[in-house]
Structures are given as C-alpha cells and as structure tokens.
Image (spheres, rainbow over the protein chains, first blue to last red):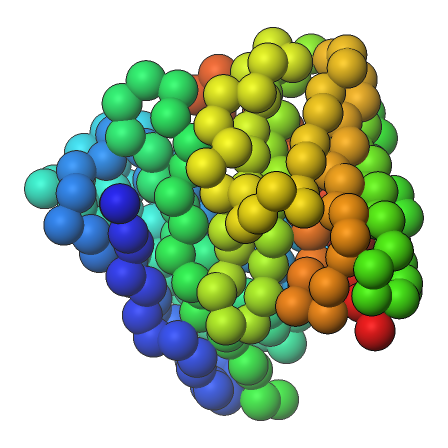
Length: 111
Length: 112
C-alpha cells in the first residue's frame, strides 16, 4: 500500500531555533497536508497544499508540495514552547481516497 | 460549530466486555473516518463512510470490531469482546470531499 516516510521521528531543539521536517513517498499524491497533535487531543490541520510546487505559509509555519508530487516539507521558524507536539504529514491520491498519514515527528522545545 | 464530538473521552473495561465508542461528525460533512492510534503503529485507518455508507473496512483488525453509521450525524465503533491489545486511542474524523479531516478529541481505551 501507499506509505509516507516521515523524518525525523523526534527532535529536541532550543527555543528560538528553526525546525525542518519532511515526508517522502514512492507514490505520487495530489494533496499534501500537515497536522499537529497536542497531548490528549486529536490532530489539527495546519496547512493544506493542493498543487505541485506550491509553497504556503501560516504564521511561522511554511510548507511546500514537492515538484515531483512525492514529497513535502514543513518548516517552523523561531520555535516557541507551545510548538511542542507531534506533527503528521498526510497525503491523498486521486479522487476521494482516504488520507495516508506518516508516523509523525515528535517535537520537544527546550526553553 | 462544536467540531467532531466523541464519547466517552476515557474508557476502562475488563477483557471480554463489549465497548462502544460514539462519534458525532460536523454537520454537512459527508465522510466519516475511524482511526486507531498507538505508539507502535501510529494512526491506522479502521473504516470510513461516505454519505453514511461503509466504503472500506479493510483496516478493521478482526471480526470483533464493527462500525455503523445509521444517519449523517452519528456513528459507533463497537468491540466485542474486547482484549488488552485493543488498548489505544480511537479517533473519529469527518470531512467534505477532497478536503482535510477534522478530528475529534479521541477516546482513550484501556482494556485490563
């Protein structure tokens, strides 16, 4: 089946540092999304990307839909303590097929 | 909008008991998904519905698991009989066609 390889699995960074995480696949996708999960809650949508090459920002977050349609990255600039959580990439192929999720990147921010 | 509502938030039950998890999707969303999250396996899609019709239940682990969506505003996931390895966080999510999902807060199930 389709799989998303998300890396890194976990990160420990100092407050104020920039963060970068990515997702790759051997399959082509038409939509890429990034979610964040806070402890005890469900994942919340951060950014959605619908076009190859698209670069989208949401505050300190920037994500790109890879030109090959097989990858995406998420950058967080100037990290703050509330950025702590698990970040998931997700992608969808054609039609109304379900999203495929990566295994997540667990981010810890040291104040 | 209240978002996707799941109940209960926490459930502790004894092995062999029946467990029913409930979900109310966002009004107007035509797709509903049940996921299970564990540390080892991450987010696993169990089953999803489009317009109240089950489309793919290939992720349901065994016959002990069943899901229903009797109407557009309610779905249940039932485990009978429950086993300790079913312990996990179960999420319900809903969406409109081709958009991202909105997740509920999840039900943390512990089977002892």
